[in-house]
Image 1 (cartoon, rainbow, N blue to C red):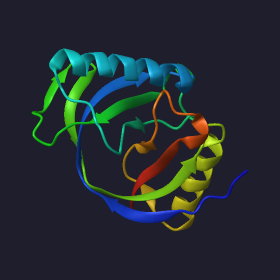
Image 2: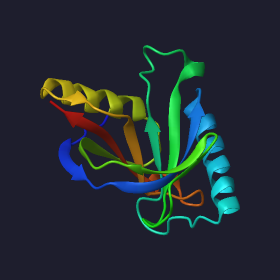
Image 3: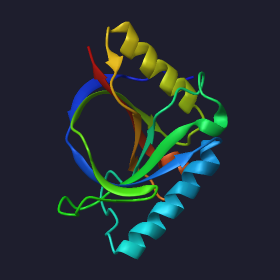
Length: 161
């Protein structure tokens, strides 16, 4: 298991199109939510991101304390700052607030994400912080056509004292 370097930084507010999803396994439910979000954005003529971050997933529940079918997440894609806020059913254009985050970078396929999350949350609590919002997976370098070995994902946990 790799050991990750964990650091703290401020991330700016980010306007995103988002769509609520629910349930495990995430390797099935997250791609389905992504497809629904892409279709909704196309219908609304909202442009897709062309630079990093290429997308985000926000995870709201602790898998050790919530039944698998109740695990809540949002799939999100950055949109231009001038895109008006809207909400329709499970989809919205919203502003993710600026946050101070503890983060680490995962390079390659998503085979050890549970370990990465365990290290990150362990570090957060060990250093006297507390999570203040949903964990974020930020897809820095990713595409469906790219080999998984080339993926770069940043896992962020918004923190406070």
